[in-house]
Image 1 (tube, rainbow, N blue to C red):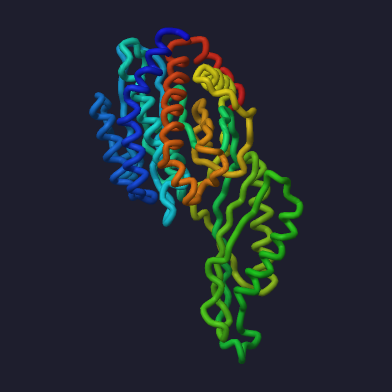
Image 2: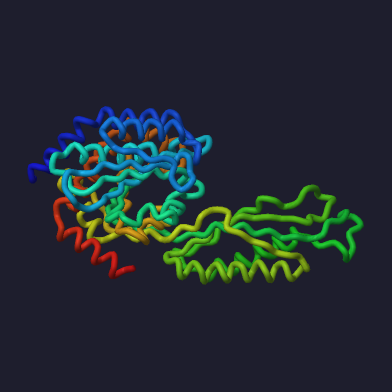
Length: 388
């Protein structure tokens, strides 16, 4: 093992207690999206203590931030993505307290190197569980001058290279004409009938989709009283596909069904996006291979091949504009299910502490490879341009 990497590992171990304290405090004080004031104050305070210059808010979001640390020589600009929002009633059932602490910890470890080249950037990204702030940060140009971006996520296994599904969040509403149900005549228009017809059409459409294509939805408003013809109904859907191009085709078929359902009862239909749209995660293979090699260096033997997760992440939008990775590291036994209280508990246990230390080391080592190896950075950028 080269001397510098040995030093980075030792430094991560020295700082570990303070980094775990960040995660532990955030984990025990969960805050939902756009209300993560305690988490942001804690993380930015820690970064300031080590000489990072902090800017906030970003893109009009109070709980977003950007922290910078410049090395003593020119070099690449590397971004670590921090997440810290929790789930209602569950807490940190997706491990975001670990994600935020790991990115901050890795950046601080690297900042202590006397040979640091380039610039370290920690980008605080709120509300991943809801609207996905990284989408807004990408649109605001926060990644325009970044060379690579990375973060880790706790999960069921160790996977350096993952892809995810593109996602559209669509709200559909049908507008009819109310009347008393008992004396309803031809003047009434039942918006619930339109909605039920729509769901029946979607069932037929879903049978034609592949395993990597999904339409999932719920009725959020179905009427006000059994004796009133509903004049307004509303439903929310998540549409997913492996690629944005495929998703756009599915979305058009989905909307065609909605228009036809409305026409069958003479109702009106309107729709809108109720959350940001996510692009598919496109892991940079060269960078992911580098991450894999560092996992091996750290003694991890159980490493899975590239995988496509059935969910969607706003890191996908980042990966479309800059070379990026989003590796998963196993938390606990690997059997805890995300978005549950069991997963939240595991993230605050000794197992959560272990995976946090591993993540800090992994991110720091992988970033160091890019900082210290110009050919590696060139290969990463070459692959990214070839796939853009």
